[in-house]
Image (cartoon, rainbow, N blue to C red):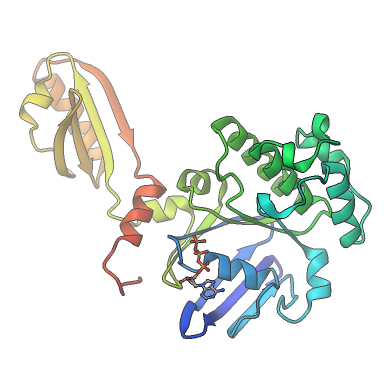
Length: 307
Ligand code: ATP
């Protein structure tokens, strides 16, 4: 299909007797940010490395914009950008030197403007070893993006960054996508995936345990929304009367908390009950299950069950 940037069809890869990836299939659309999630050892890096042409698949078919990454390394290099781990550059290299070096490798003029755009202007001639982790990660993103690749592979792009640096890098990744790049993002950070990714695949023991938009995935789990109500006279918290749709109720910090599969019915009944008791609502919170909760639900299921 024309709008697909990446197709992965029944792909598998073993290391000796260890089957790291076991016949997975997924597509990534052009212009999409696609999250690859999974616990340690799930097969994320193996999948990325095969897509990046660093390893050969044992079985199945991989394609990046029509190029087979295992067989067409020359054509692949122009299409993809790979974010390096922060330890990958010599400590004495400067950001300008690194950008020139990478651009030369890709046969492109160095896009030195990226250094300013990624907030490294003051550090353009500083030694790599003297940069903070956040600056090193920004440089890694600049080097991956400098030849304007159509597909970007990012592996834990914000690991170890503080909140502000993370938000900045997220904005930059969003900008690169807005300029047309397709992004594959492997991350352990569920909030990052939920915020950035259009769709995610959760890998578990070499198989895809779930795939869809973060909203779809959180909606297909136990799917319970948390409805919490605090009232002036604690009428609900004291008696926790049953509510339609609610499957569990508890008291948490003066809030009556209901876990519900029917948010509308529960909220309506909560408000009605408060009124009938002559109490007054002080605060009402409705929280959707997070991707992290859904991830734990999927990855902590009993071994062998992947659905
Ligand atoms: P992490 O989140 O820890 O980086 P991952 O999801 O990226 O994990 P992989 O690194 O792809 O997982 O590893 C998948 C499986 O393959 C693991 O069981 C791992 O031990 C094994 N493995 C990975 N690389 C090799 C290798 N070079 N030789 C042997 N086994 C390997």
